Amino acid sequence: AAVLLANSSPRTALRRTLPRCWIWRPPGPRALLHCTHRCLKKRKEPVRPQGAAAGSEDPEEDEEDEELGEEEDEELLSPLPPAVRPGETQRIFVVHPDIKWGPKKQHLTTAQLQLAEAVALVNSLPSWTVVDTLILSTKTPDSKFIFGKGNFQTLTEKVKGLPQLTSVFLNVERISAVTSKELEEAWGVKVFDRYTVVLHIFRYNARTREAKLQIALAELPLLRSNLKNDLANLDQQGGGSRYIMGSGETFIEVQQRLLKEKEQKIRKALEKLKKKRHLLRAQRQKREFPIISVMGYTNCGKTTLIKALTGDEGMQPRDQLFATLDVTAHAGFLPSRLPVIYVDTIGFLSQLPHNLIKSFSATLEDVVHSDVIVHVRDISHPETIPQKESVLAVLNNLEIPRCLLDSIIEVHNKVDLIDGYEAMESSALPISALLGHGLDKLKEVIENAVLKQTGKQIMTIKVDLTGPQLSWLHKEATVQDVAVLPEDNTANVKVIISDAAYGKYRKLFRQW
Ligand SMILES: Nc1nc2c(ncn2[C@@H]2O[C@H](COP(=O)(O)OP(=O)(O)OP(=O)(O)O)[C@@H](O)[C@H]2O)c(=O)[nH]1
Ligand SMILES: [Mg+2]
Image 1 (cartoon, rainbow, N blue to C red):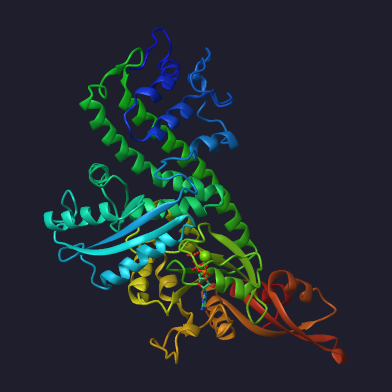
Image 2 (cartoon, protein in one colour):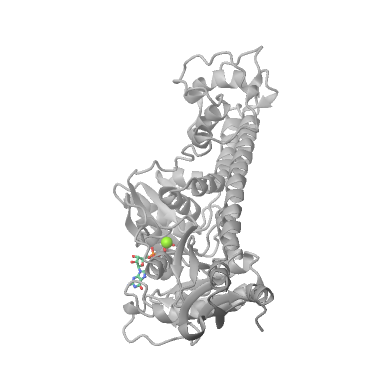
């Protein structure tokens, strides 16, 4: 049992006891203890080797208002939970429960296609391989073991018969911590659901601080349910509800409080980043660069398309689910030389757990403020129709203004993969982002939409070259062409100008 220290503040007492907790703790989320240790350590204090004396500083001094620096990031983003360690090889058996009826039955797709997506998710991670797959029907997806008795027996035999298996991926949105523990005990291997697999991919692909913080936030429910599981374990051993002397809190209460504190810190850090993003957006809007958000199901070709439209060589499209996790902006020009910003966004996935969507909707917030949305579809994908449905469902939940939703430009990408492609929907634009087909037409359509949405127009204005008009137009509008008429020192200037700027121009230079 933990050695408890009297006469010290609760946090100090806990910190001193923690190294011993490593020894007696039952198997479970050890990482949570890691979290405890880190959260309790004083911010500027070096990480203490296990078992070393903790010193006498009072960690209560931790100020809430301190700036979140690199060290704090390290604390918030500490590798939790170690469902699998980064780079650890996983040999996975992918099992798709085919739900026969009820609200969870999928109508727009088939079990084979859903299994194929689950396999693609696993293959997105370099050190994960699929050793076998199985579709198994169930009438009771909400029951303890997900399957009926007979099918569960069949599955268990199959799992036991697969050599060197490290884990089973049950292709359901979420398995409760209790069920997952029982399944792990029955099969002797790790059990993943969509939530954990997608989280792992996110972790693997996250590059920026914001993406990493969002993932840390999305992991908290997982930690909470593990904690519940732990509580059950500890109570069995009579330990969970025992008070840690001097603290007035039980071990579990301390863990819950620490998770809450962690959540608050992450939210605060994200809020700061959000403010920064708002500032950037305000700057972009001040300069009147129209913003075009490129959205769509994961792997449909969003990054490839923006790369083709902007010539931004730094962009890296990959044949992987969730290759892009951050919202990034890229400058490009429309046919009339109007400069615009293309925003690359995180891809969507059907049955993506709500927590994940919620934490990522912050990054999708920018979409609400864009001038035009381009919805890219992988038209060669067998599930292209259900994919469209799930993208539209998420978009509808993002509180996007109606006029923006109504003006979505739908693009059918990867037409090069379809022999004799024939347009399925007349309003959609067929393209191949990879081969550059159909992009001129797309740019034209985007331009028209941008002009309409931003209240701009293309017009030719006759200006006096001896006056300040031309330089004013250069500053306040986009000048496309200047045809000088030397005989009377004037020029015909072709401009893209907003209604407001044109009104100002007329007022200033009395042009009617
Ligand atoms: N054949 C073909 N392949 C394409 C086309 N567009 C994209 N791809 C391929 O599709 C894969 C995914 O492309 P990305 O641009 O990374 O897709 P994404 O939508 O950004 O994906 P996420 O960021 O993961 O959501 C890459 O292997 C691309 O080369 C296309 O027009 N034709
Ligand atoms: Mg991408």
